[in-house]
Amino acid sequence: MLLVKQQHAALKGVGVDLISCLRIKQFLARHGDYVRARFLNASERRSFKRLSLQNFAELFTAKEAFFKACGEAWMGLEGFQGMRMKRRSGDFFEMEWRPARHSKVIYRGEGHFFRSGDLVGAQAMIWK
Image (tube, rainbow, N blue to C red; front, side, top):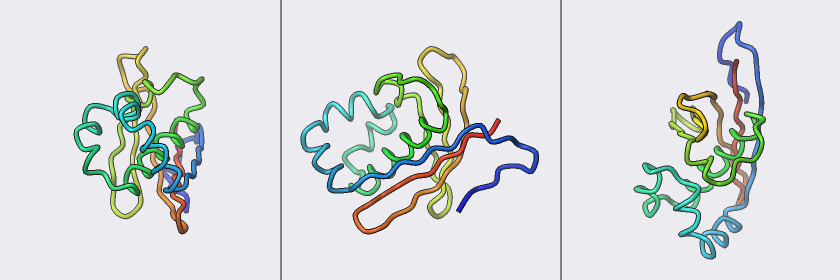
């Protein structure tokens, strides 16, 4: 299901990401402290231990999908710290991103989560 922002808004980008919860579990077992320090923003770091595996997978895929929709060059894991996700009702979310080199939010978008068995995914769209 695609979200429609406004009748007259132009679509800037679309991103999709999909990951296995088992793969996330293995990744966190090996690199959990690194992920917490480099991938998560301050608010997310505070709630990291309370996040379920599925919630972390959703956060991870939302950030990945949003980054792909932005169409920016790779900025390292630190760039993900500038992303803020706000859950909406159901499986929908809003997202914004302020890269380290900018003082203002330069991207805003929305998306939704989808699941199938062990897989968790997110689709994100950026509007001009």
